[in-house]
Length: 377
Image 1: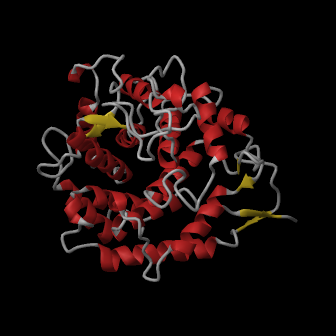
Image 2 (image 1 turned 135 degrees about the vertical axis):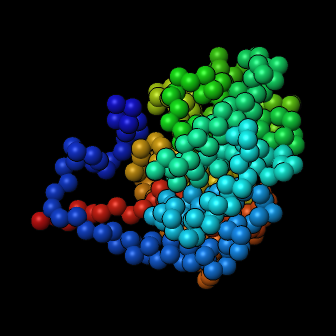
């Protein structure tokens, strides 16, 4: 019912499911071979140039990049027993702690690292080998959430969020990874951790409602999302002349996705406002509001969000229909380097690291697999 509701409200124009009126034989999409070649080249790069002897990818970043790469590989059909994946999993397992956390010694990024480890281990858990570790990791990140345990009550802008230890405040990026992890664990939308996270996410939106009475929302009421309302508020895209926090692409998709995972329907005013923003700023050449900064993080979040919305065609503010999967495939194909990797010359947030960026690209592509086309009789 939830899936049909989203499809109805956003006007998907391609028939889906058992009620499809497509007839005739199904044939592969014309771009399917190009897609498979793009993925194969990327995996070839990771196998021959990316992975160290200890199974890690970019070990200077702790287990996180390795977990993201392993997740991407499994989402493209590699099994946990595949040597490339198995060695990665063995490396990640070295960071599993007795309290359930999965992070490096002295790390300030315990929520992020443990959340992406959960995404990785749930992909590898088809035989239940990681169930105990996953349950402990789930309990661990719940303990990190900013709530009464940190002496925060629901009126505090930090309440319900997750963040980096270095900054001592939660942010929407960390909170979306937290929500992704809860989603991967099959958490119900009525779970208290999900409800608390929704409180924080709602306060990251430039939309003044009963859910967001922070001073920022009224100063830039465009419906998009920014980095955090906590500790005085911050947007990586800067501020408006009136002191508002500018919305930008990666956080707006992160916020919308988190709201979907929290069970909000398509007619909720918060969802409507977010969808209106992305209709106005639909773009695959840049991370709207940020240019090239965080571009591949944006691609991954863009794809995962539109997939969660159950949309095959997205209609922008001008009425232009976008086969967003095909468009993203084409953009990533254009940007792939000869060795099969991707890298961002704007290397903020580690996007100068080809292992991380190639993982983001493969994760984005996992939501963009060409579907068979119907061949008319």
